[in-house]
Length: 491
Image (cartoon, rainbow, N blue to C red; front, side, top):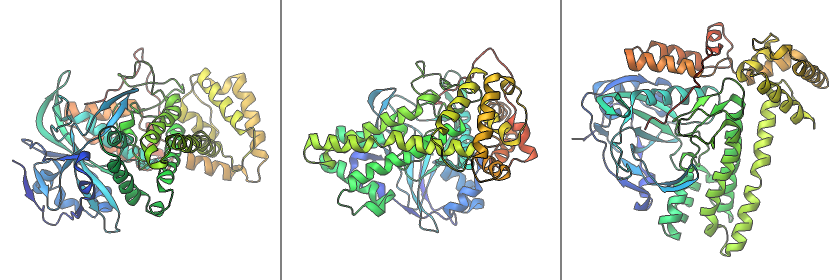
């Protein structure tokens, strides 16, 4: 039986503003208790940011909270309701294996959701057991922390706790619960849920809540709902550009996996691209490549259009005029995205100013990389440190011609080469969570209860722009394999 506790001295300071929304949006309930919780990994940096005491949370009483066996004082656990277009098909969804404990108010006054993922069945489980396996929860911990190190807006991971119980998927796997920290878990799918099963007033209440929580500067504007949408568009354009710049592939860009806050959320079959190819897909369930690397910018635009549809009644009382307003706003997305992407690519190539032909210069390099199956991350590192690549790219006539164009472009700006190199070092990570390295860490953790491999990987990923000697081994490409790398949702 779940009991209420304070976990004395832990530093919990909960508010529960989401629970003050209409009951349409959630169901209050407690986590299903687990038999033998054991702390696997704990993020002391995140704990400090949240104002939490690490030593207390790592005690038996603290681990009981992180496992869902105890409820900290002030928390009001609930499962959130939402909908979503999953691979283009609309479904009624919700937190099928997660509970929002509440919102932690930090010493600096910031507000963060604290969510338990893998905490048991909810009314939205749709036949699932509500549990999660250790491997996928550790994967989310690794990737979300890597994204944070790369400077990409993301949810964070506070802890992973093994439950001491087995769960059945294709095989029997050890169970685990992830404690996830987010600016909020409000999604495009939350608005879709309100638009399809709520009343007009409830859509407005949700929009007003989001404005107060995430965009207080525009909450009092006469056109606040249009400004809300435009701000979400701006944040998504920036976020997706950052994904593309480091070769990140989300894997499941359903509308329920797009956060209104602009954070990367829901790391399932995600992975990082090695060989550059816009058609790269890792997810086992993305048979048609809907969410391939090169499709991510367009899919984000499609998802934003679905958000716009839910806001139409708030944009104008005349339906036709509301559509026109929404179309004008969403038409800004392609240029916003491309502007962010071009700026990021210029930085990766050491370019401080803008020239009209920069897009062609960048795309020529990418096309040559694809033709010669060059490694995405290491190609930019080779350019940064003026070293030869191992793929044969640098010896090709296409690359030699491109390199001459690039050198001429560098010479047309005022900044010297050393300044360009420093810009490139700040823009090209020395290390990403290579898929084979992540799998090594997960195999050691799950199969042998050896967490040292994961801890060493996390250490290397903490500051990916340090370009330290110890990071060099993590920059090596995976050994060749006849079997393509594949990831799974881990549900």
